[in-house]
Amino acid sequence: MLVCTACGRPSPPPASSSSQENAATPRHDISGVWAGPALPTLQEAAPFTSAGQKRYQANKATWGPNAVGLAESNDPLVTCDPLGFPRSALYETRGFEFVHTPAKTIELMQYQRVWREIWTDGRALPSDVGGTSPSSLDPRWYGYSIGRWADDYTFVVETIGTDERSWLDYVGHPHSGSAHFEERYRRVDGKTLEVTVTITDPETYARPWIALKQNFVRADTQELEEQLCVPSEAIDYFKTIAEPAAAKAK
Amino acid sequence: MRRRLFLSSLVIVVLAMNVAALAHHSTAAYQTKTTTVKSAVVKKFAWQNPHCILSFDAKDARGRVMTWSVETGSPSAMSRIGWNRNSVRPGDTITVELFPAKNGAPVGRLARITQADGRELLDSLYKDSPFDTIQRK
Image (cartoon, rainbow over all chains, first blue to last red):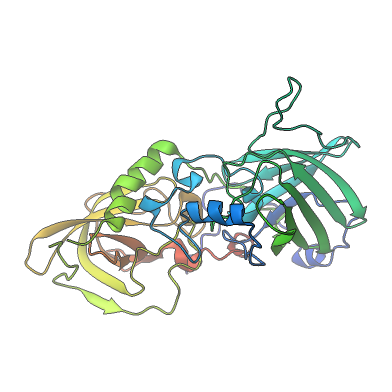
């Protein structure tokens, strides 16, 4: 067998799998590490507006119906740009963790080892992001987020003010700077978290649409791994692998 | 004309898996059938993101030495399944099974290696299931 059982890392404390699996689902609690796929399953076909369709066609993704080779792609990931939100929820979701504090919930993401702050202290979302007023807030890669409990087991996050340079997902869906995103984290049971991401962006999509509905598995003893996009290494990868693989055959 | 990938000791097999199934990057540039290269001499194993790169020399059908570079999973994915930066070293003679590029360039995606003592190491395409982080305990 080739499976590494220790891998040179600190061993997790022994856990009773039966007690873990049968644990009662706690109320108002999605804390802990959750594990899922690198490429979560995308849901509905996007209901593009004409402007949205145009932007989508300009995005040369390496996945999806119009996939190109990595060397021909303009995916922001190619240059190690931040994934941004909501792509951080729609791509490379092998591991993430929530930490609840009195005023906010923090999401720690394995990929790129970045985090989001989701305010739960009752504040509203900012009313002016990206405007021209001196008091306008600037768009951010991960936007501005607030969270609340819709019921005992469902945590709802709203996010606005995201940087429109980021893609929604790995097939290149775009979004505008005025998009509104809703994430619903529902604890199905003690070890399963259902995540639903709905996008409302009238500039880009004709109606709100669900981009993601994916279950994640609790992984309490899982260490979030160091999974980084390192520019110097990415350049080497391009020269050594991606460009030769994309070259036209002679 | 770019040299075709036929090597003196080449064997082609079909693997019952989708090379693109679990990759971080698309693998559309690669064939879906693997090629096996025997007597490959490791030049370098770059333990780096987004994908490790194994470079090795092997003779083609005419006896000329070609240098190949094949990508593997990321260091984090590979470390979960028993690899580390010293799993192969320059000078090692190994057998390499890989998905070659469609365009004939001597690059590809690793499938597995077999070391001189017979030990095999699979690429994370085979082992990096979405939830293996839990199963490995």
